Length: 301
Picture 1 (tube, one colour):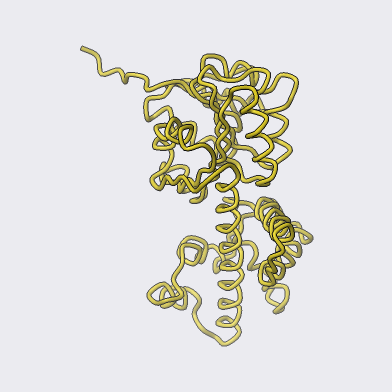
Picture 2 (cartoon, one colour; picture 1 turned 180 degrees about the horizontal axis):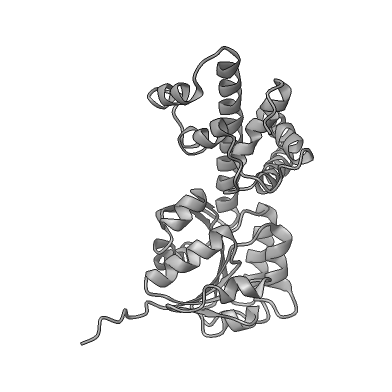
């Protein structure tokens, strides 16, 4: 008798970046056959084996799949995969289900949902929260918009990648919830930067400050996970400054379309722009603290 794991289905996975890589690996660990594709062939080839196949094209990734999942940087990237000459509308998965887990514009999601529906293909927007750590540990929070029946069809695949899986409404609702999430995250990071800058200027030990704050009402995921890196000057990339700027741009576009003023979001966006202007775009979110280093004359080597 063998202990070989029985496959739970087949997934085409497009976008093997920091998040997508871990998500694809977890789907394979959950028992799915996974065909991965990326604009960088070496990224897909690096995952080959253990239930994962490197696909040669979008169409190859979709061939025979129950679902195709995309995890890409921005709206134009997803649109290219869906609408391109060799894209998913022309080569839909056998299961007629596309799930985009990127963070992109809600209006683009609704347009792709409508166009896919005309072709008999379900389209779910299911962005995630939890960052690289959540992706690695299959502990992502998944917020999905789209048809309820399609969401239920996608649920087993979501369970291989996340622990909090919620259908939040119609097409585009998942992205709207994600943008609300990013708004809070950006402002929270800025608040932590300001608290650390104030504490440092007054001679407080920052590691002790963080520990005290984590024990009270100022506690947050960002303070817990990113605080030590801010304090130690570790700017190593997890979720990059450039990606947060993209998300904040989407937040403000949605706010303007909805006639909702977001003054704090506007302020933190200027700080992220400052970070990118100083070459921090490829660094992690915690590098926002370097803006406060510069403003307070505490620049590090």
